Length: 405
Image (cartoon, rainbow, N blue to C red; front, side, top):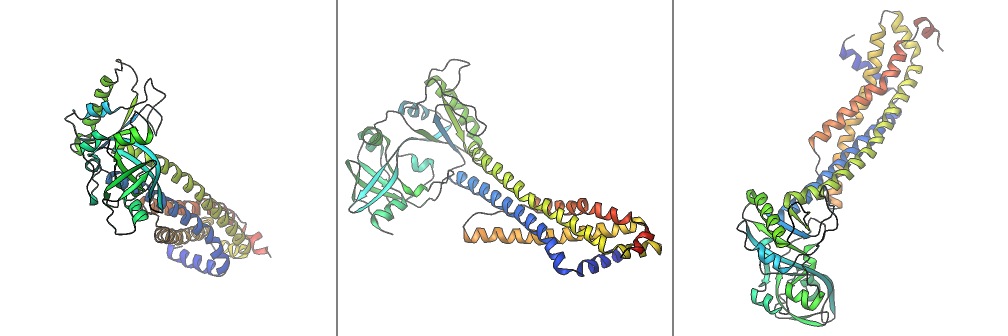
């Protein structure tokens, strides 16, 4: 029997019970659609994280105090868990680094008149906009003299400026209150958006790190240090130079464990995407259960079809059809159910991913390999769960089948 004839018979057999056929395919549609949607949203999140980190500067090198576990990086409590301004000053002597910015973080209400904003206060140095490649919208950033004098000057993030002064208003020269101190607004940063950690960078304000440490937080240690390498290809050399210098600076003996952690942009990407990748795989596996349910539904319906068409099978066997022909017929019907359902599921997955992208502003990327895998799995399920009913049909005794009522 030709494949064309087998397909024609399969289509006619499935068309006899359109509702049953549609409900059988529904399991495959939901399963494949769910897998495609979950993978698309997961890949989209990974892509967004990579873009956010690389937007911050692909040549960025970040130095954290202490040692800890983050992603695949080893860590524990070290003998020293502090980075001091002297460490940042020493880093500025490295030829592998072009800019270094101290970071001393705190949090407080920023008050202007009857408006206030609960914001992160980022104490830093004048090199911060250069390290982050972050321009200003209004005014200027503070200077080295402001850092030395621990001046009460402040640069606002875009969202903070809008909240306190209104949209498209230049607030330079105005005075705001930070805890018990009055600071002069000297600039407003351009809108930057979310960072790799998901926090909106426009919700923070900037002051000289000496001002934050002496007058806001009272801390003598830095939160972390940001630096930039001369170029992307010099990042590994810059990271090694930072590690060597800080080991000398912290008097760590040969063979001793570092009491700091150096991250590059690639490290950040790997760290942030590891969790997202694991979660995506988990969600895709859960969605894949729907494929299993859909396969069981196909097996169930094909077994019912074998029972309903017992006399038809017996007649075919009686007039010369081989058992292999009967088996092939039912396998093709099961495969047709799964492939058509899988194709519709892929379309549904694309549609759902695009809807989430539009409605929730969630990044979604549908990878080609996921589509191919989902379609291949659908075909495999059709063959796997269609085999038993097909074998059952092929094993029928022609005489007993013709007697079946």
